[in-house]
Image (cartoon, rainbow, N blue to C red; front, side, top):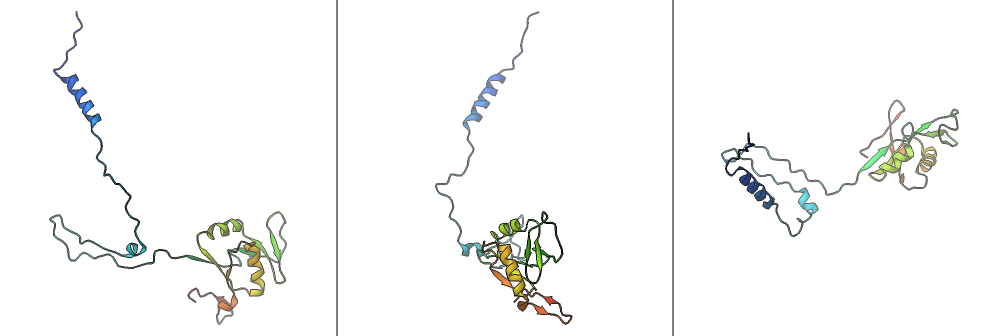
Length: 177
């Protein structure tokens, strides 16, 4: 019995031609000689909305449009932090020396919260930092200086004088002032 191979007419050649043709076709990407211009801050704050259309191409007048709330191009952000029991733990008692760095003041002692230096270093690159404390300035200034460690990141400070005293004697911080 002789080995016979049945070949359909043109099947191998047609496949070869199709493969060759697909190699010649290149994707049709848009060609740009220069990148598009960078939008101006004014262009970014303008809101334009095209009217929505039905499948038939007629516009809907009852479609709500986007609000035209305009914001500046870049708003600096502020992070307001409390001092006592947030960045430090006020402690008049003893703490093992291997556990934390301590600061002794005439009025009280304090222990830095874990990773507070790392936290302050990171967020100071993102925000303007403000310390707002209900503590008296005589106590808080040296503690804030100790936390700042000469970096100049905790320059904005608000003390008890900026707080509002409630009828029960406690103090509250008004962030709107």
